[in-house]
Length: 73
Image 1 (tube, one colour):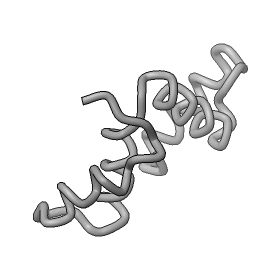
Image 2: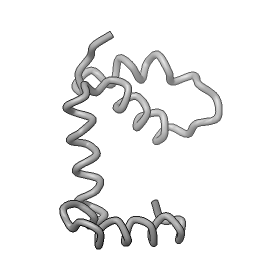
Image 3: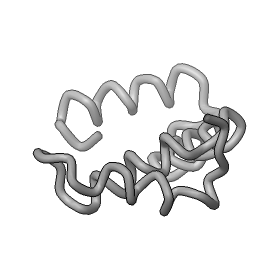
């Protein structure tokens, strides 16, 4: 099923009764399931830019490792 990020509400309607996830997690999961590969890539790029680890080479990788070890990611 190829969908678009615009159609995440339709996917959310299918998974809204899943146990073990709060509403925010369900919305994020529905968005990731509904996104095309290009849209998923853009979502990842935005996330990395928000964390400050996009385009900095090894410095960004080291910062990501520190964030992971600190439990912030």
